[in-house]
Structures are given as structure tokens and as C-alpha cells.
Length: 171
Image 1: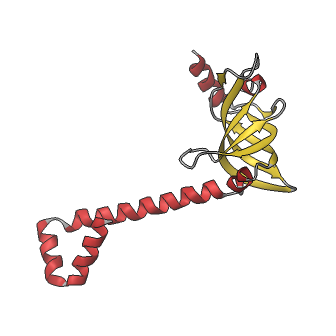
Image 2: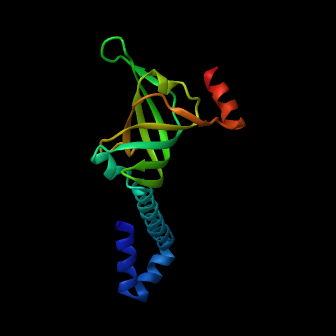
Image 3: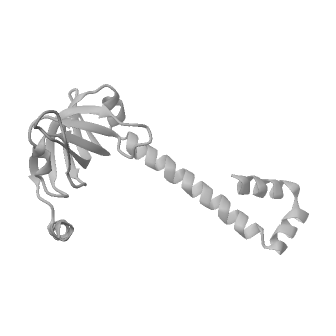
């Protein structure tokens, strides 16, 4: 921001200032800094648009009941639950979301929570889950949580490369 303001001031001041900046070698780095700031702003805006695609954050705020097709993107984490039932956490990316009579295409990163059945699908498997969306903290890199009810249905096993990577990760 400071570089962009300095660059704008230099061009507003006229030719003599630009000549001095060019001779001193400052103009190039200032231009580069201004371009990088612009590129980062565009990337941040694009990331925000991707997160908002499909209305998942809004549905999570309303705690909507959903059916989702998702790709498993993380390893299961088992936590102690109430009584003798553990709670399993698993990262996933929702591809298709059915909620309130509408089907939405999205690419929303979520955290699946549920019983040990959600630990069974392999990494990069495509699954169908039913559950209830919940909001996440604003700083979280996931858009929502999905409290999964029942076992996920595996729609597609991971490809050859993902299967090989899964075997390496297990070792």
C-alpha cells in the first residue's frame, strides 16, 4: 500500500521526480511492489468467492440438514467422546450439497464429525454423507462443520496415485 502511494505520488509530481526515481533504481521495485499488492488482492478476493460459492456458510449459520457428496482430504482423528463412544474428526471438501430442496455445486472445505464409521473411507475417496451443517470460527480455513449421522456411503474409491500415496502415508 505504501509503495503504491509512493508510486502514485511520483507520477502525480511530474517528470523530474520520475527521472530521479528511475536513475536511483527505486522505480522498478516500487512498480513490482504495486503489482504484487494488486495480485495478492485479486487472489484474496478469488479465495473469498470460492468459499462463498454454493452458500455453504449461510446454510451452516442456519444449521441446515444436508446430504453432501464430498472428497475425504484428511486422516481421521479420534477423540474421547461421551461414555464409551469416541468422536471422529475428518477433513473433507464438499463437491455437491443438497439442502432445503436445492442442489448446489461447491468446493467447500469442511470438518466432518461423527462416530467411528467416518474413519473407514480411504483418503481421497468420494463419499455421500447425511448430517447437519454447523458454523466454524471466522479464522478457520474450513467453511463449516458437518455432524454426520450414519455411515458414509463410498461412491468412488481413490485413484491409483492417491491409493499409492495413501499406502506411503500409512508406512
